[in-house]
Length: 133
Image 1 (cartoon, rainbow, N blue to C red):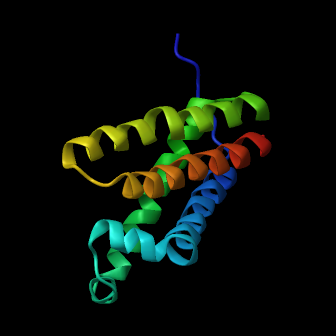
Image 2: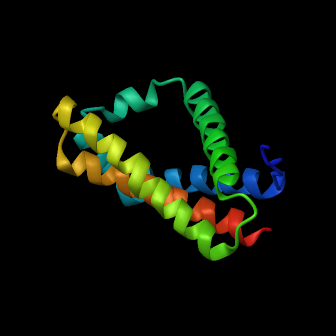
C-alpha cells in the first residue's frame, strides 16, 4: 500500500526560493560573464528578454524541483536529506545535462557552470527541507 506523502510547504517554498536566489548570485556576479560567453548570449539579448516570463517560469520550475525533492526525501533525517539532494544534483541532474551537452557539443566550461549550479542548488534545497522537519 502506498505511503501518504506529507509536505512542509513552508520548507519547500523556502527551498525553492533558495535555489532561485542562488541562481541570481551564480549567474550574476559569480559566473555571469563566463556563462554569457559559454552560451553565446549577448548582454543586449538578456536586456531585451521577457524577464517576467523567464523569472516567473524559473521560479515555478524551482518550486516543482523542491516539491519533487521533498517527496524523494520523505520523513528522513538531515543526513539522508543532504545525501539524497547531492545524489539528485550530481547523480541525476548534472549527468543528464552532461549527456545533452556531449551531443550538443557544448563546452566543458558551460557544463561546469550549469552542473555546478544544479548540484549546489539541490544540496541547498535538501539542507533546508531536511533541517525543517
